[in-house]
Length: 283
Length: 305
Ligand SMILES: Nc1ncnc2c1ncn2[C@@H]1O[C@H](COP(=O)(O)OP(=O)(O)OP(=O)(O)O)[C@@H](O)[C@H]1O
Ligand SMILES: [Mg+2]
Image (cartoon, rainbow over all chains, first blue to last red; front, side, top):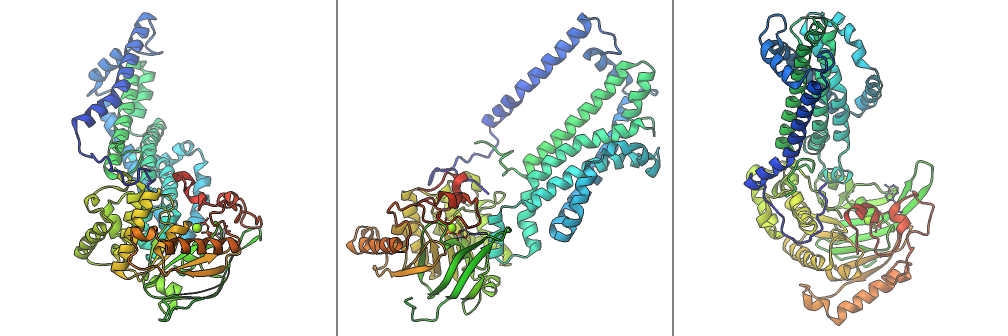
């Protein structure tokens, strides 16, 4: 639980309102990273031009950017549509996988028998390189059905969420559990008022992980065939057409989607568990 | 045993507690505990580290079960009393829920007991005023100092008006000044509410200042070696802290502790650590020196005097 600050009787520093000071700190937090990224792009650009690198090795950032513009609504390489389709698969899979993960964790915690049965299976299943099953998923759910990609994203998202959530639910402070016991609180009440809130920081860690995994799952599944207007397929077809700038445009979009997805979850985390030490204001 | 005249609210008869480790090693934590506590009494348990004070308190509160013996609270078995919400617990650590504001923490037991919303709001405010935290109702626990957090824990324990307040070294991690202030506060609350308080402490002066009776326990296996009546007048004021009678009682408790083989502030350390047959590898036990109260729980928080 909350660690004692040690200054007995002292006044807390209690400014939670957004303030110019806070805005300045946000800038201070992110400015270095932005500068490094910009510098990286500049060095990349200069290196490609200076070394006269061939496009199949690495196109310049400006070339990738112009390909993004050129092919945004292209009919052969519809990059924006592909990004949207892939993102839909990833988000759908993420929703299914995390939903199932949370549900299983709740059930496993609420009923100890379920935990004893499920956890060893889950741990064993997690050791399987699931991504290798991708072609099978195409066979099971239909190769052109986006569901086959979604399910791969879902399975990859499921395990970290389930494992972390279970840890968070069962890892409540023993003293807090004792407190609840002293109130003669029911198991359901303990779950709702103690275990669940306690698990939220664990859940968000897992969700951020799952956001990346779901994109990986969707794209890798796309490599094994299916509808064509998806990032995984465009990567393959653009390479065979030697349009490496398009390939990199697709990769850029995938990376961008992954980053935005992650940042949205980080934002949600700040809003949902502002009390947790990982996100709260240092004061 | 000086049994009080009215029907006891806590009645212990022949209580033993044996902890059996997985490897078969047995720790006799308590042996032959007989104790009667009258309604409205303030009783302190004192004894060397590892003598079973917390265990005894937890047996009264039905958080662990006695191995043998009889535990009656409010005329019923301890588990019945727990389910009737007769207890309020205050632990050494505040055990606040990080995700709840100060007032929501105080309301927690009221929610669980299904009290209506208006009452919860009203009651939390009253209790926080009582512990002098009226201005901090909306704060989050991490914004409070250790002493303030402990006061929230006291407010929470009082909020549902339990018949019995069980306090396990509630001020162990606080400095002397804060501790004395909170002692005054606890006494004031005790006098206002008329609850029965069972209070575990390592501080002889604290036990004497607060209590109607001080129960002195011996090192493992924990036994009651003496019960010292504290006949100092009430209300207990700062003047009492300087009175002859106060020091006389302190000496009496210290001598009882020493006679029982306890630490008694005499520096006779190692009281609890001598017996290696216990659950083993327990940091609090290894330390076993006077003043290392519950080192295992507090080590991370920066420990006790
Ligand atoms: N859950 C447990 N399992 C095994 N042994 C235990 C358990 N709880 C307590 N004990 C043992 O029982 C004895 C009494 O422990 P207890 O915590 O009641 O002591 P205490 O008097 O409160 O000590 P302290 O002053 O250090 O808090 C100790 O020897 C301890 O090792
Ligand atoms: Mg103890």
